[in-house]
Length: 235
Length: 204
Image (tube, rainbow over all chains, first blue to last red; front, side, top):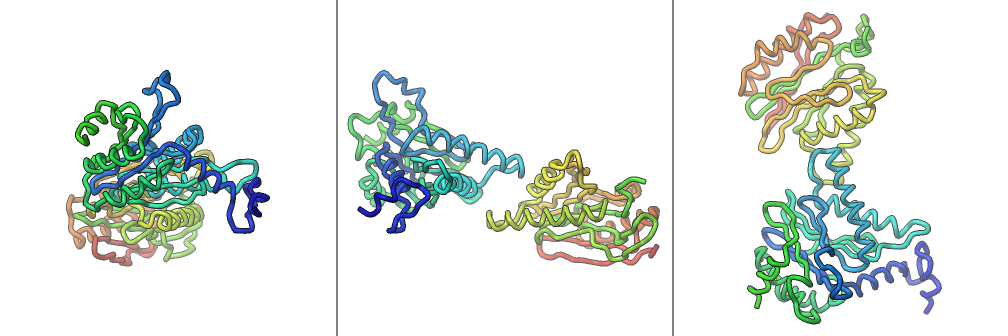
């Protein structure tokens, strides 16, 4: 295929107008563990599978959902180490904004700046794109918001979205289930049901992670016990 | 002769009931010589935020240009106007950047914040913010201005009365200062309108 000659250099377009390295990055994301987010009328929920490579891994030490500011959280699909780097950079950008304006950074601004970082890594020498897609959930003066950021640096606002292994089934499920006036609790239930669709094995509070932000504008990750409560409600 | 007294200036901002007034003198001098009698010290950042800059005129103009630049970019990025408190934090940060080679200006910031609550503040030339609930003053006439404001200020004045108070305080204070005067320039800002008035005082 003509494209393969151009697939090694990030900074060269292929004849079909693609940057093949970014396509490969998206493939890396697509083989990562499923994650999803749902925007409700009074908050946002993000969730992900937490499949560990062995039962010997201490699951309480693994945190896939992180908070960027007290009112913005993020989850990913793809390469964990790349995610950590982006979280670090985003947190610094959020703090720099606060230092300058003494105001919490609006969600759109943080997403824009994170996306700009990811774009830089698609147009510089000697670097590769990030192998993660992010789902950023936040609540600010413009209400609850959910954004997806891709390795190319493009970002989209979603009412509900999924990424990773089971993306097409999950998105179909979400399209059927999503309603505009959904409340946060309903959204958490829907998120769990969506994860359950493609889940191999028994779902429990220990092998999924859920983060929520409601109208008190404080992002928090649910404890395994709280997740088990929601799971019981769903059964 | 201090660098802050090279050009001469007088600035005052005062809080009223859901409104504020910001006023300045109009003299631009080079030490003892008067160069201009229509110099503008108060600038509009947006419809509900005004900035007055006292001190060295060249630094005041440059600082204003930098701040307007930052505010325009903010407006484009965030698709909204800056709140007065945010703008004050920005001015403070920009002044402190030049901590060891400062702008020789003392800004006075006045604006209407959320729910039309008036906000005023001043800061020194390296960005130490001073918030006030009643009035703030700056410039070579500041000592007289403090006295006049303290005596004439009443809380919760309506726009008409606020205008009278600010004008009287300004004109009586600049009369005691040889480096400021030649009339006054007053803005009274309410949630619905901005009124701009030129005062005629002792033209010396």
